[in-house]
Amino acid sequence: MPSSLWTRLSSGLARTKFHLTDRMRQVLGSRALSRDVLDDLEEVLIGADVGVEATTRIIETLEQAPERPSAGATWAIKKVRSTVHEMLARRAIKLALSDAPPTVILVVGVNGVGKTTTIGKLAARFASGGKKVLIGAADTFRAAADEQLTIWAERASAQIVRHQRGSDAASVAYDAVSAARARGSDVVLIDTAGRLHTKLNLMEELKKIKRVLSKLDPSYPHETLLVLDAMSGQNALVQAKQFHQAIGLSGIALTKLDSSAKGGIIIAIAGELDVPIKLVGVGEAMEDLQDFDPDAFVEALFGDGVQ
Image 1 (cartoon, helix red, strand yellow):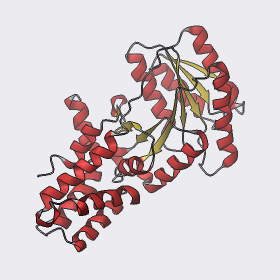
Image 2 (cartoon, one colour):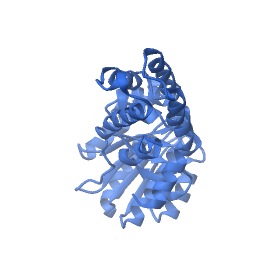
Image 3 (cartoon, one colour):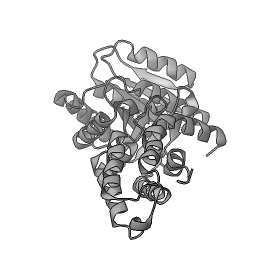
């Protein structure tokens, strides 16, 4: 990872590091790893949004290690670090382009998580890599949605397909992919209306979009990417579970890590869902949407476990 990206990731995770790693060191201090200390450590992990399942796995790993009775804080933090890394590395799958373009990426999520911005940054990334990008404005409900996407498309020199407000979202998606195929586009990014994960009728609309796209090609969409806001903490995990159950996700983009102390939600998602986190947002700049790198994430969060 280039040093500039590493610096932004490390800076973006500073709040999470304080609430997780720094508090772990405070709790552990020079104390032996007794049951009481492990209980305190469990409380820190839960408080940092690491999640119940992941926290339980971490604590059990510490409990069952033969070194524990004679070990101290440095060993414990290194053990937590290696356990977290193992959980994250198992799901380390990057966003990849299909060998048979266009690659169709369907972007979903609730209102306000940064879907439009994520699409814009992805469009710019692909375009800067020499790819021909088309954006499908299938959020036909929010008044400013297609205007915002048009601005992002212009910045990225991408094409855009949009219909009138209130049009059928599946039709927009279908037309966008059809246009991309006809124009020789490499990537299609399809925006969708923000929807609460509890609204069954809106989840059915997403299923319809996927069905319609699959009629063009059974492999479409290649990616169904859920955008989550790191600031929402455990609610992000609830959203991920319900979207995955309803439509099947291929990956997650976690935004606003730089504004949140709840970056531990990455660990919670890895501990409870078989859905890889593919992208993380650590700032407002184009380059602040990064491929998720478990090595870099763990290093930024824990260091080498000694400091």
